[in-house]
Image (cartoon, rainbow, N blue to C red; front, side, top):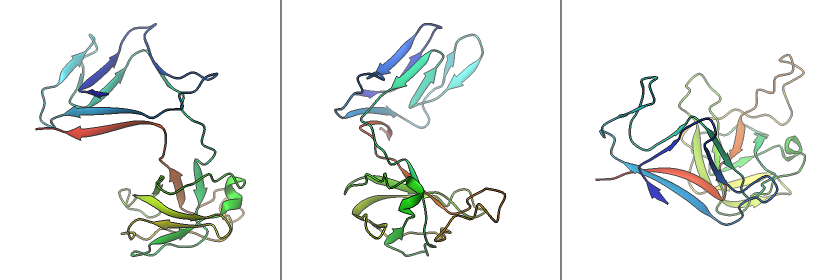
Length: 177
């Protein structure tokens, strides 16, 4: 679906794709299209303004897609800038890492710079070693360790997070002329 803006408006308004009992298993892509300098719209009497490529929700939005067991896992060793693979702690995800070639993952920032997170396409997943081969080299350093740091930091595991971004229901934005 190509669209400029979606407004789910009203107490009983809903935008649904699939249900809990019957998830949507095909591929759904909502492509929000617009220009960065597009005129804003005012939503309701609250004075809230919105620009291009938006989904404004005053009702309910429910997307139920194909179940994926892998959502997040921790880095099992540090990742240096220029790396083309990362090693993850498969045990921290209870062995439920259903990665496959073509999936998209993100490495969360692990330093003071909030904008050093990165995303990659998986070219290979080795469940035995916990190694994910990436489609390109990393730009930033990401901290990881073989085991959790929770016992040293009041229960907080400081290792970098590897997040799954692959879903069969996607929302993307596209700049148009």
